[in-house]
Image (cartoon, rainbow, N blue to C red; front, side, top):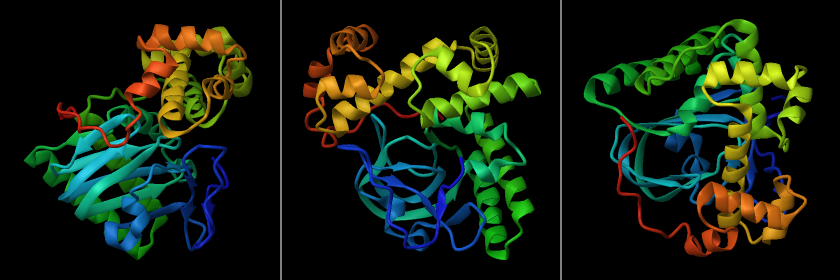
Length: 301
């Protein structure tokens, strides 16, 4: 994902009509990586308004109160927590007070030494709010602190190595399986990245973009991820439709076109089949978002 870092002070990209703002990573030099405390990163590290990133974010919270909203899930702070947010996800903070910990920001470009980490990050983002026991917290805090110290010293190769260890250790917490063989895994990674970054809505469109056949794409994605491209595309469509229904004032017809449906009636049938609600009913149920009660169940540990 090129061109996602900008000089400090550069205005955010203008969102499409009705969508949340899109933030790019501000860096003072060419390295697409930044890290610091909530205070040193600044107010956007705890932004109270829904927004998206063109970069990855790992949030390690060791203290504070409030609620973190990631897409359609709301998590009340009970530190320590580890959170992974990938490009395209919508998130914001509510009533955040005295946040303590570290925020790590980096683009896909920074993962050049360990490209398989892109898939691990994507899977971690599906379970974005991890509670850590004392032993896991002690190990992760040591790694995060070392990463922060290395960032201040400025050795890029060591930063990449430490980030890889952190992502791998976080994946162990969720029992995320490791990468599959090189070519197939690279194709699966590219597919996963495109589902978050593009407006492609059929398996053939993804296959053409990646440069493989639809059959090959189906095989490698199913083997690497455990689900077919069609399933993942449906999930991406529903996820984006929910975001737009809740976060924007776009009409159902406009939303259906935004996610690749020329026929809004067909979109409504698709949405009801996948969610149990019509788009209008879903929007009505969430009309007061984000002022709903916090989810009662705790995220997986």
